[in-house]
Length: 414
Image (cartoon, rainbow, N blue to C red; front, side):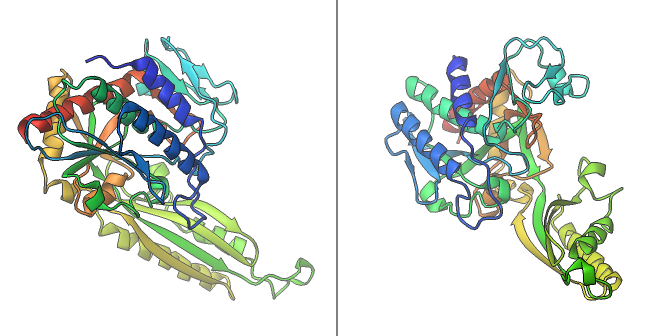
C-alpha cells in the first residue's frame, strides 16, 4: 500500500503552526482557543476526504466515522489523538524546519543557535540518517506530541477512502483536547464513540506498542505567609517564597525525582511555582507504575509541609492531591486482542513489534480505566515537550501503514 508521504508531511506542517498550548490555570475545556481552531480545520479536512459525519462538539472534541468495507459484522475500532500541546514549552509561533536526507551531522536550530540536536547524545537521531526529519527552530516545541498522531490518523482516513478494496470494519476517529493537563477524556461519551477497542497514536519512534503507563496524581501545594512592608518586616513578615523554597528543598533529589530515575522508578516532580511573599502555589506531579505508591508520595509532601511549618512560624501549608490517570495495564488484560492484533499487524508488514512502557500517560490510560481498552502506538515523536523536539516522516508513514494493517487484522480475525 502506497502512503502519500508528501501529503502526510504537508498535513503535519499545517497542524503544528496552530498554537494549541494547553493552559492548566484555566477551568474551561478546551483550555485554549487554538484547539478549537485546529478541530475546525480537521472537520473540514475529514469531510473533504468523504467522512460525512465528521463534527466538532461543544467541547471541541472531533468525531468521525470511516465506513466499513467488510462483508460481515466486525467490532468497531477507534483511533484517538490529542490536539493540545504541553504547557511546559510554548507552542506559539512554531516554525518547523524540514531536513531532507539527514546526513548525520549536528543540527543547529536556526532560531536559537545554543539549541543543537546532536546524534552523539541521541541514539534515535543517530539511527535516522537518510530520513526526512522535522525539527523546531529552537524557540518553541514542535508539537509532534501529538500532532504527529493527528496527521497519521487523518492520512489513514484519506488512504482508506481512496482504497475501498482494503477490507476493514467500522472505524471511529476521535480527537481530544487538553490531554497534556490530564483532562483529555473528561467529556468523552463512550456510548457515542461506540467502539469495542481504541488505540491512541501518541508514541515515539516506530513499531512500539505501549502496554503500561504511569499512574498519576497531581498535588497543588499552597504556602501562605504574612506580607508587610520590608522596612518593618522584622518579627512580623513570614515570607511564603522562602518557606516554599525550603519545602521544595526537603523533597528527594537523589531518588524519586525525574532527574534521578528511569525504567519503572516513580517520582515527585515540582514543575510550576507562582506567587509572592503572601502566598505561593506549587504544582507537583506524582508518578509511579504502582498506583498504591502514590499515597506514599502524597505522605512525603505532607511530611515536608509539616516540617516546613515548624521552621517558619506563622506559615501555613496546604497539600491538595487530585487523581489524574491510572496505569492501563489491568484494563488491557480484559481484551488481550487489542495488543495481540497490533503485534500481528506489524509482523504482517515484516516488522518486529516491541511491547513498551510509558513513563507518562495518554488518553488511553483514562479510556482503559473507563472500560475501553486502549493501547498506545508509535507515531515518531522524539524529545517531546522540548525545544529540541523532532519527528521523522518515515516513522509517521510507518504509523499509517501499521494502522491500515491493524484494521485488516481486526476485520479478518475478530
